[in-house]
Length: 136
Image (cartoon, rainbow, N blue to C red; front, side, top):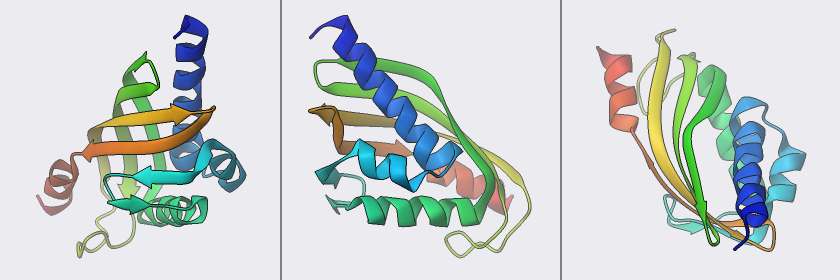
């Protein structure tokens, strides 16, 4: 795979984080996801509308939600990254009442790109660390 393809795949993943987390841009999300997108963390195929609904719920729960790539690597059709999310807890999350606390949590995600669209996602997000910040 050429460096241009690797760079384009990384740019797509970063644009997806921007659309899902930093700006919540439903039209961009629809354009970025393959019609057969499969989210391994959710264990199922997800439509763009389901991804948008999930993103909207996260934005409702965490004000000023943002994500930044700490490291991004691309090889063949896979992009892998380490990300940090930040926000303020403003509505219930997993049974925890709103705390108003600013939170920061990290995760690692792998994305498969096919024909210029995101076709698969594997994610390991430190929700245990997030929960600890909300309960302590």
